[in-house]
Each structure stands twice: as C-alpha cells, then as structure tokens.
Length: 264
Image (cartoon, rainbow, N blue to C red; front, top):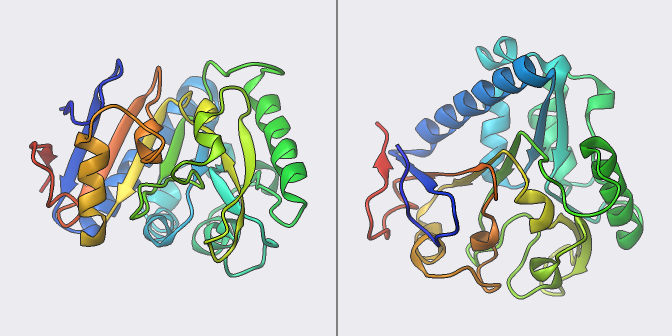
C-alpha cells in the first residue's frame, strides 16, 4: 500500500515504518532479493547501485548470509555505486572498500560484474570515466537515459543530502551529466564523485534507508516540506518512471505528521 507523502510529482511515494533497525534491514534484504529475481527472470541480469555509510553496511552483511546468499543468483548481479569519496579503494573512507568487506567478498559475484568508481584518480577524470561506463551499460551515448538501474540504494544525512549530493551544490541542478566531481570544503574527504539526479531518477526502483532519531526532523522536511528544492537534495530524487520507497525505522519516523504504513 502506497502513501502519498512528500512532494507530488507524478508518482506516489511509498513510506514504510519498521519498529527497529533489524526489522527494517530484514525487510529491505527481502525487497532487494525479490527485485533481483524478477530482473534476472525478465532480462537476465540485476543492475544494483550501492550506497555508502553505516546503515547500508548492515544490509550488505545480511545479504551475504543465508537465505539471501543462496536465494540470489549472484553471477547475474552487476554492482555500481551512487557515489564515492576520492580515496584509494583500500582506504578506510572508501565506499567500495566497505561494500567489498561487507558483501562482495562474501558472495559468488564475478569480478567483472563489480563496476566501481575510481576514487583514486583525478576527480573530474574519474567522473567522466564512470559516466562513460554507465552510458555503455545503459545503451545511450548522449542525452538523458530512459531507464537505468533495477535498484538504487540511498541513505540520507542529517542535512538532507543523499549520495554525494549536498545542499546547494551544482550536481543538483545538472540537466545533462550523469556523474560529477565536486569539492565540499567542510567534509573530512572534500572531493567526492556522485551520480546526478539525471541518472538516479531513471532507475526502476529507488530505496532510501533511514534509521535513527537524529534523522527525524530532516525526514519530515523532506517528505512533508513542500516542492523539491536544492536545500534538501533527497527531495530531488523522484524516479520518473520507477518506484520510490522510503524504508525507515520508528525513531526516524517519529516526527512525521501524516501516517505512513507501519510494518510489524
């Protein structure tokens, strides 16, 4: 059952609330596995864009264990990233390193199916290279994509950022490029490479994972705060032809004034 929380733009937003983080992650693991099976049955592969951060790490660890380890045909899963910090792949701040330790080293996925962002390269060159990788996969040399990932996993920061789309930064208003490098001085790793809304909003499924009381005020702003704007980047992620899910725990949902569906 879908809820129409959030800025209206054509398609409804599904907001599901879970009593705790563990229940949320289990439900999302089942959701991802279901999408994988459907995509593989229909098109022979599952194209998944991963998120960084502590919240998705728990999901990745769950996916690497039974029943999901055996329930997904990992040989047909192709993994991408929504953003990356500009550090080498073995660096503690690398999103790639986190995903490899929590998931990729634990499942039988072919190395060639893992398409990482090369954060160790010069940022603008790395962004351009990753855009070419994506355009090759999705079959469009120029212009906006019609359809991209089968699923994009995203988180949301306390400031409303998602991926490396930060409030008021150029990628939020980009209308052509799929991947951009940007420098945010206040961040511990200032240089970031991020997918833009151009490519994220062409996904078939976008799922936000949000947990913890610290996210509650911002979640209410994003979902109930009126028309999308560049001060709240998460508001700008609204798939044009796909489905948008917000999977949140009770603590993060505590400030919502409208009633989303609640899952036991």
